[in-house]
Length: 327
Image 1 (cartoon, rainbow, N blue to C red):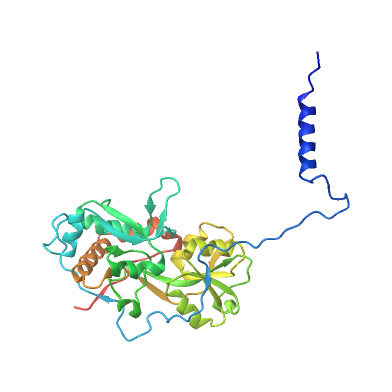
Image 2 (cartoon, one colour; image 1 turned 90 degrees about the vertical axis):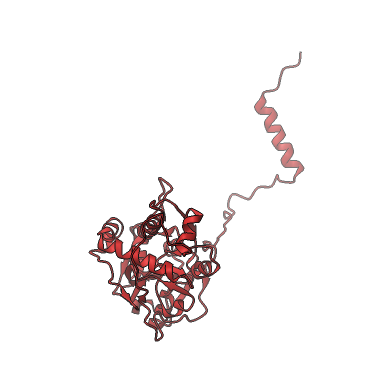
């Protein structure tokens, strides 16, 4: 009988045969340098240089912060006939445009999967006023640059997405009275040496596309090299990877980014104020008055302060803005 060959011997023979057939029997000499390769860190998808100069926020001669005076809020589930609110009630849900990358204002809870934040609570207050139920709501995730387009197309009923009131935007959409006032500041690495806007000269700065903070920063620091991204989370990633030197936008958004990384901090004095309001399509004045009524109730009932204490206490003491009405 012929003895069986050990399995290890057979495997070694097969490997040797394969190497011989493919011409792979040569190995580098022991003193040859090891192979090397370098690769650039990829930028987030959609990150592009800002090539145009944006208008400075609130430039123009309109009284940007005034809105329509609210009437008495109707009883939930009993919306006025033939009103925008009646159409929303008939549909069975309020469609709200927001994002899930603005920590503290609107973000997805990594444990529960729920969308939460200050803006989300504002949106749920509107839904409660229509349906008597804050959960009869559908969220549609938008980028900052898509907010006006989705309102004009009727794809959303309202936008509650850290949307600042400006004269230019008021030409395209309507706004509620302001529900929050933010200050534009700077986010940078703790050891960056950046302390205020003057230190951004010639530096790389990130901002989400379509935000008003770009125009203000360009007017203050014309030599800053601005990169725009689809989301604020992408700006944080680029800062962490050293692809930009700073991020600049509203302090409330920057505080949410800073909570995700202990090596970055919000710095410098305010570069200007941003008044957040609910965006509404033109031609729906009844919905503007309705939302202003909801915001009035949120302010006077103490609910605004509860929301602030829950989400934004990291910014220090806060109070709701006082509305101004044009009629």
